[in-house]
Length: 253
Image (cartoon, rainbow, N blue to C red):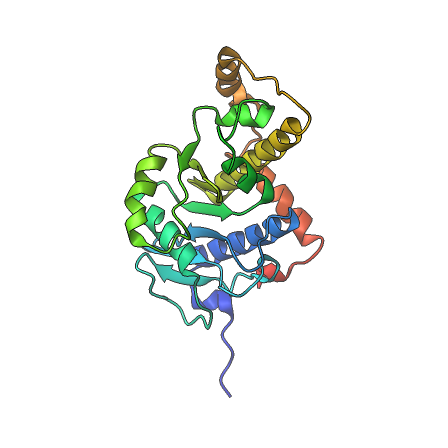
């Protein structure tokens, strides 16, 4: 009788670590209420494999994603493992574009949260009216809605509109962020989501107070002094993984 090979043994140690980190992130997003049925995507590049990245299986809820169920594909959409799951083209097209052209886009996150979609649908977009929004002043890109992102030809406009920024509000659509590491992308998404949530609450009550440009500049200059050790988002993400683990550790398999 053949001995069963564990999922971890089917890939390199570096890939398995990336798989576990990404699976944990899907569970964290679900815990925070950022799931959207079986839609939306978080992707990471596979370490030491040019042009390969991991994406969620199309059909699983974020709460069901595990390290072994993630699908490894290349930037042309070819499946590189024996996954039985399909990949959502709406996720592949957009994420493959950025993974192909942006060397620092190790992790990419796209969500349809209520707050993110609402602010992306608002004239003027994100406004400097709260602490978290000030983090992003002058650092948010915008891309007009062109329909579901399944057409390759939209890519040139996405790249042009993103420019050197690494956070974007897809108008009438939602949040898109990326980072050099998954924790960096996570804390960027978390902060942008909070900025949108607080803006919605503020605008519902009346005329907001706009933070002056000189205060925003000081705020952005000093933000690094409030960062925990380990790199952007590292301590924050680790804390959320511990919280997920206290509820369900199945993502590790």
